[in-house]
Image 1 (cartoon, rainbow, N blue to C red):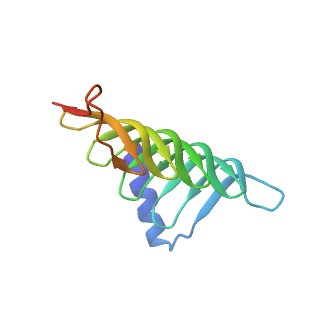
Image 2: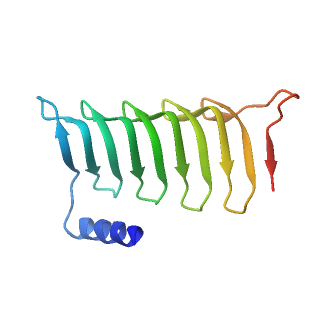
Length: 137
């Protein structure tokens, strides 16, 4: 039902020439600040905390290509702990830094396999022999 609602909303936006829209709390300058929901004309939708017009704090973002991220944000970037569910069913749970996987994380693949390890600046790191990164099927 949720997907059907998003598809309908996206289709209606395309038909009506939808522009970005925000509903929620604002600061004295009129910027998104506090809890709110923003719709972008490309179909992306974010609901959660804002600070001075930026995604900041806890929030959920559903992207136009149907990926979904739930977790912490800092100045419009994924930052802290979060979970990214990909359109193909794969899920990444772990740490983010300035929009990139950074620190410990775990992939759970749609086929049932898993991979757990460390990331640095978005790239998987080689592990020490005592704690190998492994993919389990």
